[in-house]
Length: 290
Image (cartoon, rainbow, N blue to C red):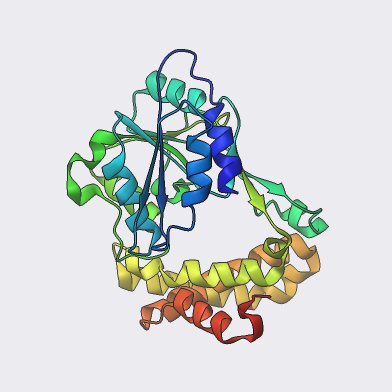
């Protein structure tokens, strides 16, 4: 996947408005991505910087990327995503037009196999927002974003490695509270590669539990967050028999809400579900997931 991403990044158009380089942060102490990056460096004229960040964790890797970046702007994209050729061009043009601290774009699914019909109808992988819309922190993430690098001149603005899941939303919440604005560019599309296992009900529900378990960690008012989650859990559980009559898409969205709320209550008790699921996968035969 990384090799595909690097090739797509090398083909980015810029309308002669900017230049760019690529920073790859390998979050594996053994340097498992080094051969892929070295092979790409030999084939391209674009400057590619490769660094190993031995401390595990997405926020740590993001902060390392920021420290290694040399430009005025920093774009983030995940290694399982592929951008359109005009991705950077669209983000840059939108930032220049709206004069904001950052621009986010859509991450659309690229299915490796035909997904179940309920996945397509529920649109759990998709969202579309009008270009230029000012975002709330709840609408944010870092899988497709261009940011002003001077945001990070204050080290307090870095991603918080203690948050865990959802540290990107925590970052945007803090920045918005400091007066920075972020807008959407619906044309700056990247595609996330979705293998068959991500189209299973268990994947969505497990992810919702993990996501919910970190709600308390980034909440500004923890008692209120716990109360809201308990209320939401009760309402959706009570309505579930009725909601199930309206088909699989609505049923799955309801179950996801239930799992998020339940995860928040579990997280409030100090249990990190992400660690628990990782431990169980490691103990299962073959270490696989279902």
